Length: 145
Length: 118
Image (cartoon, rainbow over all chains, first blue to last red; front, side):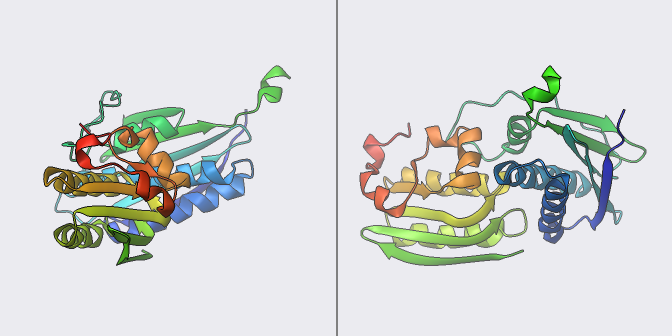
């Protein structure tokens, strides 16, 4: 059993801080050591989606709030979780990627999260929703050994 | 957030060139520029080759611009590579939008009537 290295960042519920969350996640992913630049770019995109979702949940609430971004990296996997304190819990059913449609306005976030990660878990925390995603290290030799 | 947008011309195309990242914070400026550019020309290209990231918010804005251009019979294209191109592919938006690798490939983008859109 390995306990991973944990990095944590708290940001205000403000769209100007989405970029800070992306950069934080990219730094953690680099520190993990085994993710290549394409994977790090994909994780930056996932971070953007998770924090944007949290901001939108938070927007329904008047309380000033923070969003907590946490990365945990192990030798075999990278975990990223984003927690809001928006009070509600809105766990989406794993959405199928919709047929492409020129008249669609949005809804690209969850399909991107699903496409770019190996697991996505939506759980209730004490004061809102935490979304945790996992990316596994592709390494057949480790599994063979 | 690092973000800069400017308008240029490439042959018959009006090109909106984006540098930086398109997300919830920068999407309003991106959208405003696209609305202005749409009024100027019947052939609109968004050059994202110097863009480091376009998230779902930016994809939605891009699709909105495509819809406006196509509904008036115009041509629309996205120039993108790397992680930005992958975002269009993962959401299958590359199936309904003309997403090309470079500005030189714009010439091959067909008119709306014969385009890949439906």
